[in-house]
Amino acid sequence: MRFCLVLLVLVAISACSRPTEGLTDGTALFEQTCARCHGHDGRGDPTAKAQLGVPDMTDPAWQRAHTDEIIKLTVHEGSKSKKMPPFGEVYSNEQLDAIIRHVRSFAAK
Ligand code: HEC
Image 1 (cartoon, protein in one colour):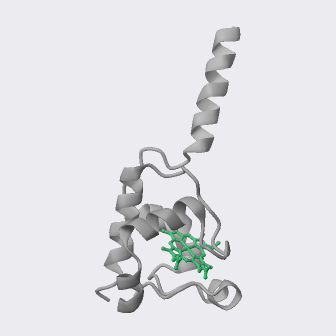
Image 2 (cartoon, helix red, strand yellow):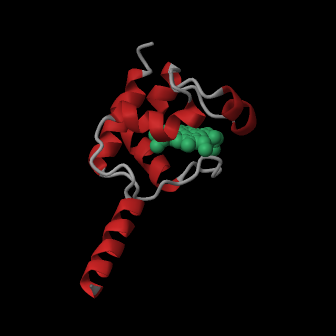
């Protein structure tokens, strides 16, 4: 009985720390977490834009200035001003790469 309880707690903890575990669809991940601020098309949700000043990810200059490393760092630690919150280790490297591919897809539009 006690073993079952421990197991249950462990499962619950791992489920909480990685809510998107197993999901490697960058579009779905972006829609789930980033789109409420960055908008579905990367241009920025109008409210978040007015209140927080989210950047336009479709801007070629923005794309050039933000290397994959910068995007990863921002997701891990939040933006410098902390207006974008840090996500810590919520995403695996594979998930981050998928999210970045989705962010890059905004450039062509
Ligand atoms: C709560 C709103 C919010 C969410 C959710 C959010 N962001 Fe941001 N993001 C911002 C804001 C605001 C900025 C501009 C930050 C600033 O000016 O300091 C920003 C900036 C960025 C930058 C540029 C950072 C820089 O230094 O120029 C990247 C890259 C980025 N976001 C990626 C993402 C990704 C990927 C996700 C999803 C995992 C995400 N953001 C989720 C609000 C958000």
